[in-house]
Length: 498
Figure 1 (cartoon, rainbow, N blue to C red):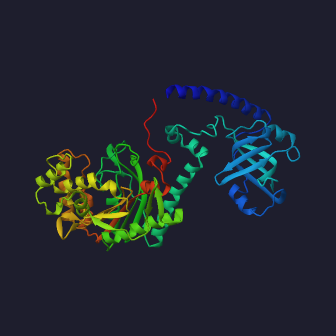
Figure 2: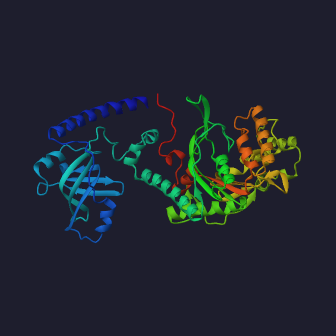
Figure 3: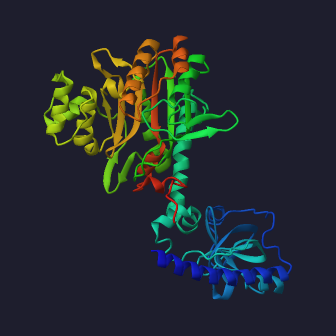
C-alpha cells in the first residue's frame, strides 16, 4: 500500500507540474484564475426542469450563466460536461460563439477546474440539453488531478480522509450526506411544529454527566481548569426544565465519548435529545416512532426500508417487550424469578459469558440480553424494563424496585433511541449518583460523577418529565443503507497515516 501511494504521489506531481504551467499561461493571457465571484443565474437541475419540453435540435431564447466543475472534456474542448451541486449540464464551445481569446482559454482547461459560462440554451439533435457558450471564465484552476473516472477512489481510507474528493467523484456519497441533512431537518421541523423549543447547552463541562461513558479531557489555560467534552446534554437540558424556560425542549448537537472505533461508533457523534414536562417514558415511545417514521417518509417517501438486503417496516406502532421477557424467550432463564446476585451471575456464566464478581443482578440481566437477544432484534421494537443498576437517571418501576421506567429502541439489532421517565426526586438521584461513585472506586471508568449543582437544581423542583435521545448517525445509516458510520459522517475520526 505504501508503494502504491508513492507511485500515485509521483504521478500526481507530474500532473501538478503540467497544470502549474497552464496556470502561468492563463496569467500571461491576463486571466485571473481565482477571481472573487461569478453572477450565476441558473443551476443544471433548474435548466432541465425549465426546458423539459424543448425539442431536440432547437435553440431557446434563454440566455443563462452557469457554473460548476469540469468532469469531462470531449472533442478537443468542443464539449464540456459541467457539474454543479444539482446535476450536469453540457457546454458547447465553438468559434461561431466564442472569441479567439476565449477559445485559447478553453485549451488551458483541465478536468476538475471550476469555471463559469454564459450562453443560450439549446437541445442537441441527440436530445442533450446544452449551453452554446459565448463567454467562459476560470473560477478556480485545479492544480491536482481528479481520481480516474471509472475506478474513482478505490481506497476506502482515502474516501474518508479526503472526503472532498469522495464527494466530487461520488453522487452516492453526496446523496447520503444530503439525506443526513434532510433527516435532521425533518426532526427539527416536526418538533417545532409540536411546540418544542430548540436550545443549546455547553460542550465544555466541569463535571461529565448525563451518560455512562469515558470523557475526553481538555484544559482551559486562563482558568487553569480541566474541562470535559460533553458526553451528553441531559443534565443541562433538565436544568432548563427546572428553570421553566419551556415545557418542551430539544437539542441537536455533538457528543464526545472516549471510546473505540467500529462500523457503528465514532468518538464524536450527533444526537437529538428532548424533554417534555408532565409526561412519562410511554409518551417518549410515541414521539420516537413519529420522529423516526416521519423522517423516513420525508426523506425516502416511505416507511418501508431495506438495510443490507433485509426489509424493515418502520410504520408505527412498534411492539414493546421487556428485557427480562425477551431474555426468557431466548434462553429459558427467568431473571425476574432470580433474587440473588450470585445466582444471576451464575446463569450468565452458564451461557458462556464471564462477569466480574462485583456486578449485581441488573448487570447480569443486561449481559444476558446483550449476548442472546440484542443482535436478533430486527425491529423496530421498544425494549422496556431496564435494570436500576444500569439506569442511574431513570425513575424506578413502582412494580419492581430492581427495574426502571426506561426503554431502548432497537432496529436491525442496533440501539437507535434511549428514553426514561426522568428522576425528579433529588434524594433518589443523589443515591443513584453515590452508587455510581462507588462503582468508579471499584474501577468502572464509565460510571457517572456526582454533580452537586444538578442535585441542587432538582431540590428547587423539576416537574415530572419524559426524556428521549435518538442517535442521528445510526438512524441515517439505516435510512441510507450505509454499512459504516463513516459513510454518514462527513469527516469521521481517523488514525493519522504515518
